[in-house]
Amino acid sequence: MNEADFAGRVALVTGGADGMGWAAVQRFAARGAAVAICDTNVELAGQRIAALKAMGATAKYFETQVGDPQACEQAVRGVVAELGRLDFAFNNAGYPGELLPFAEQKPAIWDRVIAVTLSGVFHCMRAELTAMLATGGGAIVNNASISGLVGFATLAPYSAAKHGVLGLTKCAALEYARQGIRVNAICPGYMDTSMTQQSTTAAMREALAASAPIGRLGAPSEAADVATWLCSSAASYVNGACIPVDGGVTAA
Ligand SMILES: NC(=O)c1ccc[n+]([C@@H]2O[C@H](COP(=O)([O-])OP(=O)(O)OC[C@H]3O[C@@H](n4cnc5c(N)ncnc54)[C@H](O)[C@@H]3O)[C@@H](O)[C@H]2O)c1
Image (tube, rainbow, N blue to C red; front, side):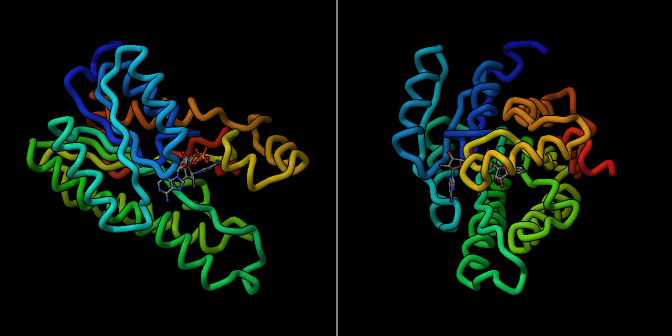
């Protein structure tokens, strides 16, 4: 990897303050891109921006609730206004809802999961595609999940939303490839992030790790490496792909 191959480029990451988003932000910055963190967590994002600036990166925070269509548009407009252009977007923010049997899932949780996890990607993509068309191209990567490839018992709204994210990915990939924009998705498995820590017990995490063919949870960096690779010229013929990053879980 050429460490500065993203020099002069601008990367936007939703949910960029923690987990896989933060891991991707660090990789974009290490490869020379200016980075925009779009996240709801003002305090953590502030710390991340300070860390990025300390390592010499150009970095800006845009407070963004991806469940709000206007916030998504404002964030992308802000990135273009303040950083000059948009080359790469990692649409990563999502909300898992609650682990419940299907019949006990609540309409309010369904609405929230769909608003953040599915509609948030749609609204961000619309604005990102518009910005990328203005400069002649770019690359979008959506963070779906293995729950977008197969069902996950007790996570029906989330699984429906993530299947939808793959639909958005494939449609945009068909529509924009000839205009220089590639659109792909990653489908992480059981990752060791705050989201997993907050939604599972230690015993559940142990069981998830044991059930993965690779025998452990994934590190955020292992998803971020694939996401940033998809933005690079090394992936120049990869378009509309939905790549499992799951230690083999969906190979079964
Ligand atoms: N953790 C897993 O095992 C796993 C597996 C597959 C897919 N995913 C997906 O990967 C993505 C990232 O997950 P993670 O585990 O790295 O999460 P995380 O909890 O470690 O980090 C999520 C970040 O997103 C921000 N965020 C949350 N809601 C937001 C919103 N509505 N608008 C803007 N920012 C918001 C948070 O403040 C945080 O900085 C999510 O879409 C998740 O569904 C997670």
